[in-house]
Image 1 (cartoon, helix red, strand yellow):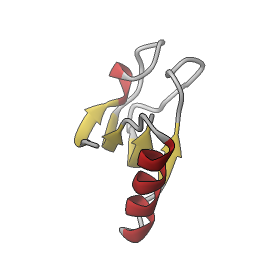
Image 2 (cartoon, one colour):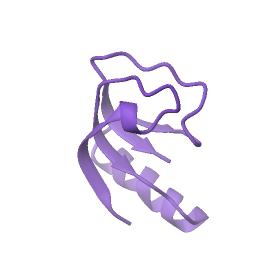
Image 3 (tube, helix red, strand yellow):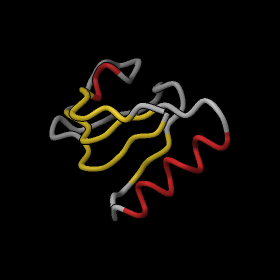
Image 4 (spheres, one colour):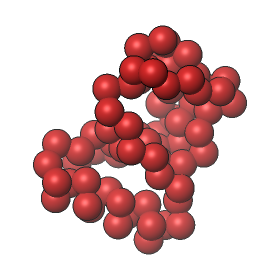
Length: 69
């Protein structure tokens, strides 16, 4: 489980728009998803769970939290 910092949201969406994401991680199993959510909560960081990135419109100022895919 690798948590990346300052990832461009535009690289995560099919529309290729959006600003920087403070943290990004991909969960491949239910246990990884649970661990990422626990980590975000323990650090008092907002998190958002997204799928493949389609149908997402993201502001250019980005997201100051963790995106979990």
